[in-house]
Image (tube, rainbow, N blue to C red; front, side, top):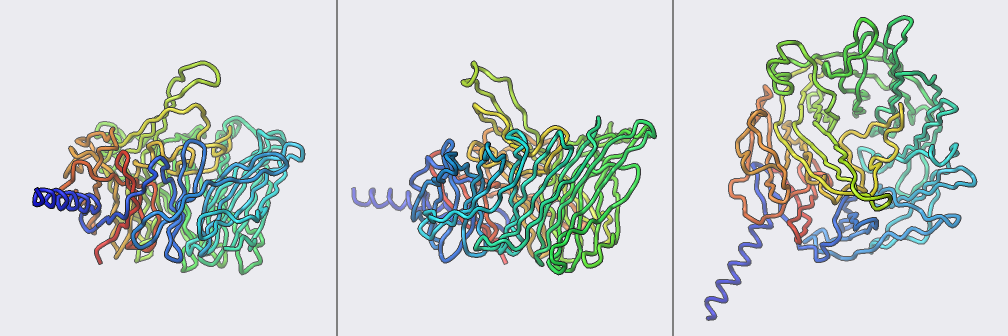
Length: 549
């Protein structure tokens, strides 16, 4: 009897250890202690400092700060984010971020009387509780509640600064207003600027804040793209500008015009490197003889600007090669010279060791189903689809080194009582580019299992994602099967040789009830180490993903 009991205990221990470690190729995920309160789902890992990991969790409309030990990833505390009111109006939670070694939460409120949009920052103490002091960061004048705009957050490359942008469209005034602030770990403002960009409202106008970023030198950049067709001249008018704010110039605004003809910019991903170059990469479309843009993807452009003198060093327009188009639209359409549907959004832009770039662009589609129910009790089904990823490796001169497609098919559905999940990111003919970003209000409902984690280490790109066990060894996009039930997913990884050929790696021995990775919830500790979050029904754990050295 005793021997049987010991055998059972040893078996359970072995099973627990096996489930806690996952090996795929050169990557190992070691999970920590089980998170006991699994009714709260982690939607963001803010960072790690002083032997503690800080994470954001949610349950319905409430948000919580969870603190874990770095050593075994066991839970230390859980505290609800309870933001006090401002002028008798409750402050709505916006985001959480680690700046330097301090964690802060941010909340906003609209003042109807003064027509002001406010943003507050509150420090998270070591025990996970909020400090008593609120720091007012923004008090931006707007026109009305419907045009109150939204706040956007971006970490600096070193993690010691946080760039916050408020953007709003004032329809009657025909202006886009954006306000930028660069903050340090004490929430002191290192840079502040507000701008009203006028535009003439006309049919077919598209105005986009295509990207915004902060460099290692604390320089701030924002990309503006305005496009419309002139019926009289039958031409497409494209204004593609970078607004630069350099620390060396006292953050005075400088405008960099990028001029070209007969093409339309679809999107943009920006990267300012340590060598003083500002890279802009994205998709472009061709323009017909009558001035109308085709709107479909012709290829990838790559621009490089010397930051010190604002000089456009180069601008390349690279059409998709035939082999890539066959994988995306099929052989028949590729032979006819058809372009790619505009269903791909920028996922990541990575700088290679040789000064070139790697752009990852993912198929993303969000389907809103028909609502059922009456009035405020109506429910709407939402489906997220994240499929294949176009991987383009660019040479230092902006030409294409190689291009390939990661084959995958993923979807997740949930039901909601409210729409407008992307807030202000799109409003009429004005939009703020969001890439593959998923709002915090949606995280925890399924989309966090989709998409992918790209890791660039020792001059090698590897992309990790969840997949169907029936896709083991499959790299052909025509043969790939859907991952519909993400609870049964297993991790897969692909890497590339020097010519861009895909090498797929699958888990050799997948356990039946092993934890499932949530690729959209991770924190980069170093190029070879990430903190990740995995779960399986009622079991949740943090873990460390490491790359073999």
